[in-house]
Image (cartoon, rainbow, N blue to C red; front, side, top):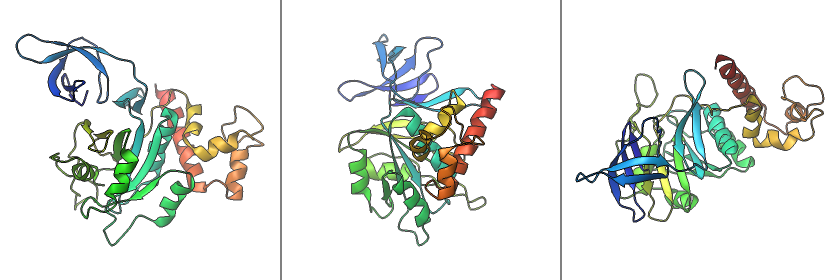
Length: 290
């Protein structure tokens, strides 16, 4: 399924042809990227989607009641887009990377608008690169860095995620010929991006692979069934946790915690540790609320 607008859908067949479709079964919840089974419906040519095939990955976030809401399915790579304007929120980037780790899919960071005179702090990008995440510099406007981004996307079913206004739709326009998407503008009043992309859509890439564009956000957190999963979202914490005194260590106040020792020694960045603590507390709060 390449797009969803409530009960109306756009599906793609094995030959790459797109067809209008609708949800034919009550309670069948679908998102972009789902593999589905459909039937032809009379003379209209619309496809009646009757079944969702099993998913191998789900990008989720908690809803207002703390329950998991699926945003996209069957992705193999999550690409976080940031930019000098609006200024990057490192904690949102952390949470997207944590979602990728928990889903066990690849992740990369693209700094768009690299042609602007101001830039994303080099120390922040270096922090992610040190952890092993690919960090790419690009400019949809200037056309720079796009070949490296295409190579990163090839062979993957990727989703572009990030704050509103960072230029995800502009990157998609640059990567996929003939795609007409409204590009996000920046609100002069607030400095935050206006939401122009309102639905997740999937596009075939000329060099192979698929790319999903998603609405911009002002906040994000992965929906975790168990607060203990928060630690799995941080590579450096996973690497250190095996040396903790207690197997169920939450890395908060427990004695003999190798993660806290790593923070004190500088092996683990204090900002990343604080990001983990925030995600853990949020997940615990949502669990209580649920």
